[in-house]
Length: 418
Image (cartoon, rainbow, N blue to C red; front, side, top):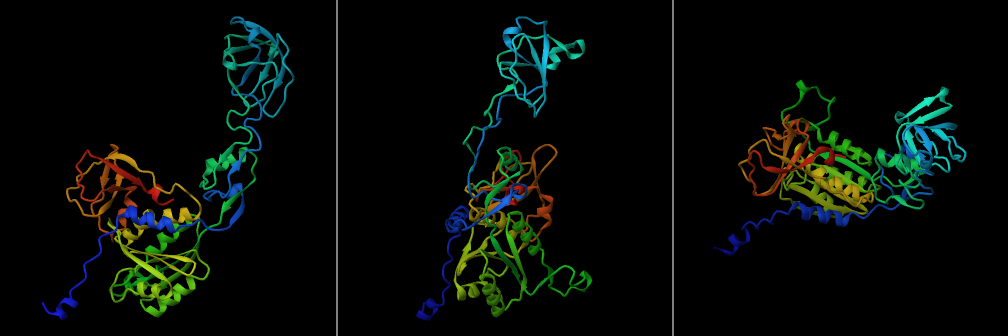
């Protein structure tokens, strides 16, 4: 072989990057954003707590009744059928007086237990007499029966929510229960979003019957924007950038000005019309990864000034899945969330998958009536109907076949998209 022939020999391709390695590399770059916001607890759903929530009180603040019934002294109830005068009535929000020996107090759920009472007898085990002036107690209570003790839920000074907690309705209720009207939360990531491709058309611009050959509607822009908003991001939508290098450079330069992340869809291959790579490299740095996953092999990560850059593949299902597995955890980590891994569920396959692939596969599936997972017939990366039909994906290791009845690792979309 001549020297010239040797120089023209194609370079060996780099090995595919394992998905877990790609995610670890990304998360290593995701330093939590500086700054925080103070928001009303009513408006903090989905935000990430920037400071721990510490309780300034105990919950419940005092012993209270967990039942409608009668507060009694156990020493007075020596046997079923004892009759006692009802000396007071205590409703939730009220405050009784110390319970005298030989008397009972009518009490309602949530009301403070009067001093001296050591048990609650629920009203179903009692019989009101003389229009409620007396009560017959038909059961002997155990010590502490139906009493919620002060601080049994939350102790004074306890940390009830850690920094980095992503707030859900349950956490908001817990914060309110300790009197927090506002919360310190991580600021929202600012994300610039655009798509590349001269073939892309926005819905509403051209009627379907007038679409030019090769043109397609830009579906990625819609689901990517929606997923970014679900993750609490402030989104700057820069639209569709033409497949020209100068236009791509201009869009990237604008996006890098005041955004934390630039997210693009399409143009991360190495074709003549894919300008993302040289454009990013002219402004910053870029790594093009070939990830051992299907769908979603091409992926790009880089930096332009202070902004992170991520380039997703253009095929819609590839972009959809890659966002859930790589972009979502990155954005959560930027907001200070530590546990960013989606929670998988073991499930039974209701299908056969005899074709093992060298890449780790994410197969679109949904739960059937019998509780097993059924497989969408067309697993192509361009078939977006698979994502609306499915309720999650099977995370299938490289080289693995699946037989009906096998236990598989199921990732619900609710874990990947929120």
